[in-house]
Length: 455
Image (cartoon, rainbow, N blue to C red):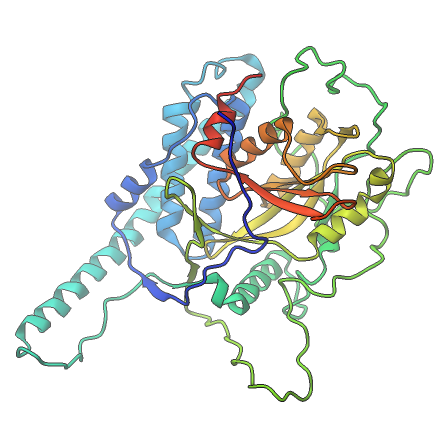
């Protein structure tokens, strides 16, 4: 069966203007929802471990946002995933995975401790909500038939749920506030995400197609194997840079390079982070007033799309400058007819995913393939873990071909979608029209078809 692809829009939105309140849930309801997780039983252990680590990151992000129920959900799901899948994996006892398995067991112990700490607050909120519902219903039954009085306040709610498509200004403010808090940067609201070039991390030394190493597929003993996202052999072994990206490396004229030019010779003229300035005079109607964040209100963005089996997908925000920045960095390789790949990294804020970093790992490339080396994968995930980021997909160029996912690309993409269902694959084909495409495997049947394909 040929896997099917869908092409999500660059910024996923919801056409409805729904604004609603999210009611608290009981611990039992959260556990039931967390257990409803359809993981692939035959995925490699390294992919399973990275998926587990992604669950921990999501739990931490939800707790930071004050969303204790989803934090509890991902902590429980992580522990359940470890006991039902990772600990029983055929490769779990192999010596090469011993450090990762030890860390995974420690993470589960931390899960259980954290869930016990969160449980009282979740239970208290649930009980208060149930008491308020009972009081409201009791008053309603005492009101005369046909009465329209509504003096009873509504039950307390957990958070305000918004449509991302209709509340991009709030999404922008939330993203800037959180990223600024992480950077401890007192600058203005738009300083953090105005320029994508500040979030470009070059982990690759160089891309040298003729270079042969133990990690190159031309010398690999498993030439048919695909490079899924891997588990780093040691966490924290690469010191975290003081800035969110590495210092610039001088270009080398004798080799095709892929580094961060010092600095990028352009600044995005428009991105999802800042709207264009309004003209001083306008004959049309005045724009709606900008919505400001409440310092006490918790926000969540409702799902903007669903998989083919009905699973909700969180909104994914992509900077409009992303492709321009990437193709500019890859220009020397594109001119030499070599592919270039990068990893899309970001953060989870109020149940929406924001791409904030483009990471360039050490890689090998040809005219129609590009692969992250084992060293590149290790450094990539060390960097992601140290910076508190999530991997949300990948981007690569087709120097002389149109926009599509090759068979090898499909096997790469499925690894990212296993880790995070919202992950996307972006293809840039500068010489063709259209010059880009955004893809994901259908789920089902495409995702399962690729996971079960071993050719």
